[in-house]
Image (cartoon, rainbow, N blue to C red; front, side, top):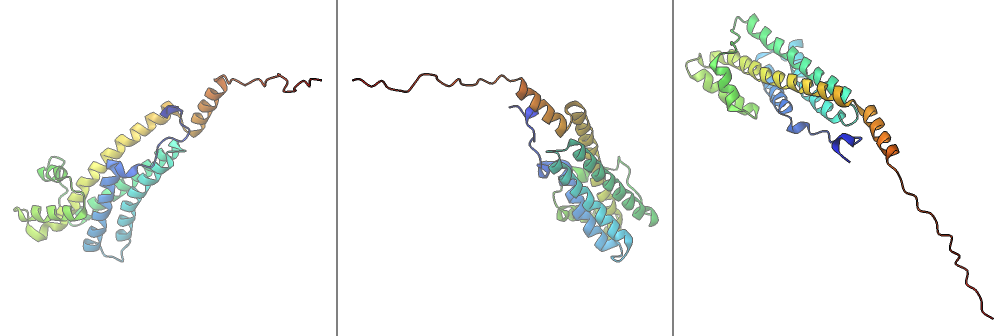
Length: 210
């Protein structure tokens, strides 16, 4: 039976998804950022952390649900994308309200961070300190650098999710979901001829000799 003919295909490998890995990094970075720069009792603090968490959780849930519902996978991946977009606006608001610059896409610092391929919040923090120490304002510039670092990671995650959503939509359109797979498998099995064994009619009775 081929992968296309499998009723419940391989699913749940979200930890291998680059979008999940970057979203998880954003979640960790956001938790630290909010604890340091946003009032902990404020609604914004909770909203930013929850939006970051939603991005991670919905990628994972969508991947896990894909075994029986491609439609649900697509829906949850869209929710993850929307959550990260909400978070992006929060970071932009943080910078704008403090009259701090939002780096242009062509800013070399953005590409430098992307090229680092940071895997942990600690590695991002090291980059922020290095960036602040290279003639960019020192510790006073950390809020600006940290927020723009998060925006850079969000741009990467959103681009990955956009491609992921396009691929999921194309697969759903082409292959359908669980119901369609079930119909194809049942139709294939019904069309496959089955051979039935005919029981032997040979008598097992032995003749007695007199």
